[in-house]
Length: 588
Image 1 (cartoon, rainbow, N blue to C red):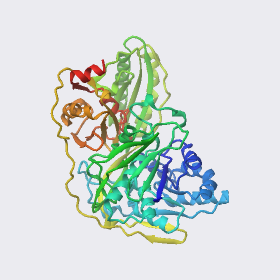
Image 2: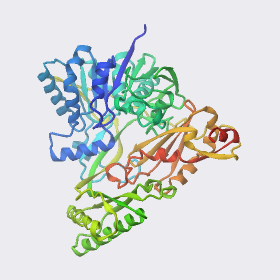
Image 3: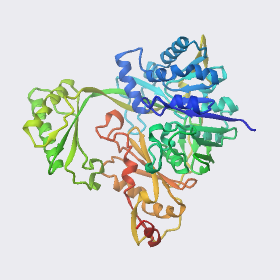
Image 4: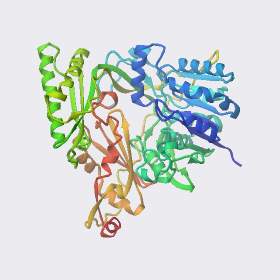
């Protein structure tokens, strides 16, 4: 039988469930365990932690989760790759080594360095923000390149059992082991793309096994979700499954939703090791809770690494309270306006200056839906957010909020208490030449430089905006998009990505005809400060949309309830799609 490699992913973000690693180690029959801890917002959080403690800056939870599993990992010969090192992979690796010594387990551990560019930031002073063209801000607290799979591959080839990285492409945690196991070269671009796709599908943990799935009501066992496993062949084809007897759902649609998650142009998804073309990928059921994925293609990587930097930009505070009774939204808005008006006056009187920004959201009144809101509730949660350059100004705001309970509108309850004031850390994204980044593997006393191919200038994407389907008669009526498709959304900085996949091929012409980039832009106009692009995915029968500058700054810089666009797909699923009389009758 041809060799296959089984890789399970136990974490999608810092703070994910502590039960997944044990599930995969005890029930998964895996060769490798990987875990992704570093969302873009996480780097901002780790930056704050390192500002308070220079020895911190990594995900301590990882060590706590893995420590009791180390004997089983050793006994089964499981190898581990994780980016929990964050801003301090050496410290994370040392903490894990100490845990192994306490457990009496001998494991060879390595960590990867080179992603941290902060010490040499002056060499990149001319860099510009990828989105805005703005100059690099002063006072950076982090500056990290997204490294690829090659350092992870080299660490495993040198004999490491556990590899700890800092900032790297999430999918590289899977591609690195595959390159080591199968001997894939740096120029085997189709296989590198396939391995990256395997990593991309499982990097968000249970999000491909029924988590966040549009048809959530069909997913059993949320209390014991199965975490994903990819079983990869030497040619790059792979199957997605989960441990037997666990909750969740693995289906072509649940996996397709994850495939389109946060990828932008599906024909030119740029990763450090390869530019991926996933437009013709096919996803087919191959058994109960098992799908087969094939058809990934790849092109040479670019000459640059993507770099995410963070910098402090003032302070923010957030508070909420509940308002009940007749015209709850009106009362909530009146109280919020009065509070901001009063405190603005106090700030001016005390010479503290105006708020930098404020936001009011009436949660329960479909605030996120803007002009598409339909609710007329008798209870809402009023969410107030304010930012200011001076921490004392926000403390003053926090002291004045309690007055609303007795001195403003009736029906206020559920006050969350005097709010805390926290620093704002904003994101600056740029590109740096790969030749200026020196990645290395540290294993015991040995430090080994990693050779990185220089890459090539990017070429035009083969992606198409349209599938080119024949126009259809859609004058009989309309149905909400959710009847015809599933969808998933997420963020990349200040941009939102929405992937839409048709439930049946016959629905595609209607979706293509109605759900244009222009239509999506008009639908989300109240959130957008940029434009919308659409790309077709003929392999899975879907479309991917990129909503530029739709998140109010994104991450911790955004004042919105949904700073990462997680609800954007759910909102778009209400979009009316004109259909034929025959299809309309199906949903009567």
